[in-house]
Length: 240
View 1 (tube, rainbow, N blue to C red):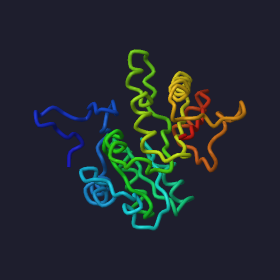
View 2 (view 1 turned 90 degrees about the vertical axis):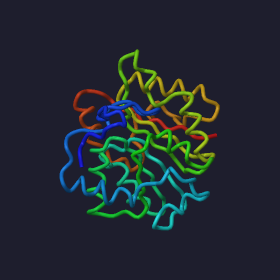
View 3 (view 1 turned 180 degrees about the vertical axis):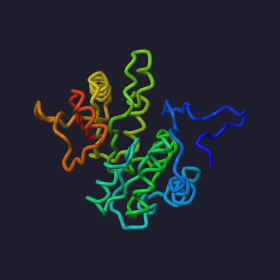
View 4 (view 1 turned 30 degrees about the vertical axis):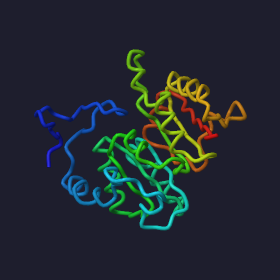
């Protein structure tokens, strides 16, 4: 197994653009164990977006679940695993196009299997469009790439079109949660969600948006941001 796939034309795919994902999908060479898990475990855990989604997403899981949540860009999977452990009666679909993050998650799931977790390394927009309307109980977008340069802001995941997708997949009353340590992206998200008729910001006090979510485990990226003087924001928007 190589760490650089190739397109039909022979061009390396270490860096490739998908409709909803910009940036690299490969990092350093996977270990032998990680490569084995990508080949053997990932196909068993991956949702198959080439087939129609089941009307009831609970059918995707080996454990009985009463609702399904989605996390886009789970990184190393710390938050996703924590949520799956806290809520064993909820199913979780984690999306991560970056192969090294996915491999790290697979190692953790091999050591501690979680029957209420399914994975995808597809473009998140493909998965969102695959989900039945009103089928998910929540969606988390935590510390996405902020694309700091103004000319790259169009690459940010939060956009009117993607909020339409998220709103379609969420059931009424469900939360779209967004966390970031980048002020411009926080403000960007607040403006876009305020302008979207399907979402209502849940903050009631000035301190709410700097208060971590209940049971928040923290992440290594967040620890680094705080050390470097950036204050995270934790936004939550209710699907109307």
